[in-house]
Amino acid sequence: MSTPPVIEVQGLTKSFRTYKKEPGFWGAIRGLGRRHYEQTVAVKDVNFTVAPGEFVGFLGPNGAGKTTTLKMLAGLLHPSQGQARVLGYVPWERADGYRRQFALLLGQKNQLWWDLPARESLELNARIYGLSRPEFERTVGHMTELLRVQDKLNVMVRELSLGERMKLELIAALLHRPKVLFLDEPTIGLDVVSQKTVREFLREYNAREKTTILLTSHYMADIQELCRRVIIIDHGTIFFDGLLGDIVDRFADSKIITLQVAGAAEYPAAELAGYGELLEQSPGTLKFKVKRDRQIAVCKALLDHFPVTDIDIEEVPIEDVIRQIFAR
Image: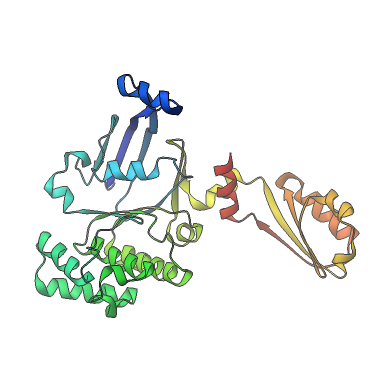
C-alpha cells in the first residue's frame, strides 16, 4: 500500500485586485471618486503532490508565484479557487493541529524579536509550543552546535550578522520539530561559508527527521546539493515537475566540448567559429558550445584538424539551463 502524500495541491489559483492609478495630479484627483482596478493572477491552476520526507526545490524567476504558493500552503493567504491539503489539513482553515506541525521561514522576514537576545525569543516559542525545559535545552544545544552559533544566543538580535541571524531564525522555525517545512530563500544574502553551513544542516536535518521540505532559492548550489526533484513555475503556472537531472535532457540542446591543443591561442577566431560557439580560447585550451545533434561530427572535424592531446564532452551546467529557461 502506497504512502499518501503529505502535500496535495489541485487547481490552486490566487489572483489579486490591484488599484491602477492614472498619471499626473488630475489622475490622482479623479482616483478619489472613481478608481480603476486590475486583476493580477499570481498563481494559476497549480497541481502537485509531495511525498513524506521529500526535499523539493521550487524554482522560478521573480514574480513567478513561488512565495504566494508557499503562503497559501502555510495558511497565510486564501486561494481564489482550488484545493490543497497538508498533513490532511486545509491550510487556510488554520486548525491548531496543523499550526503545530509546520513551519514557514521567509528569508527576508524576522520572527526573532529585534531588541532581545535570541535565546529569549526561542524560549517564548518553546512556551507557545509547550516544550519542556530539558527538551528545549537539548534541541537548542544540538542545533546551535551544528550551525556554529552557540556563542550568539545571548546577543541582541539587532547586533547579529545576517548569517548569524538567519541560522537562529532557522532554529526558531525548527524548535517544535515540524513535519513540514516551507523555506523561502533561506540563504539569501549570506556569504558562501554561511550558505554552506546552512545547506549541510538542512541536508542532515532532512535525513534524520524525515521532514518534508519545500525550498525556493535563487542559488542553484542550494538546489543541486539538496533537491533531487524540482518544480519550476513561471507566470503562476507549473511547466516542469521532475528530477533535477532531467532538466538538462529536456531543455539543454547543446553540449560543451573542451580540447587540449598546443598553441590554441594562435588560431584565428573566425576559423574556430565554424565548429560552434567559442566559449574559451587560451594558450592550451579551446572550448566550444555545440548543438547535440552535431557533437559527433564536430568532434571528428576537430580531431582531424587540430593536434588534440585531450578532449572532454560534458553537459551544459544546470545553472545555465535554468537561466535560459527563465529567459524564455
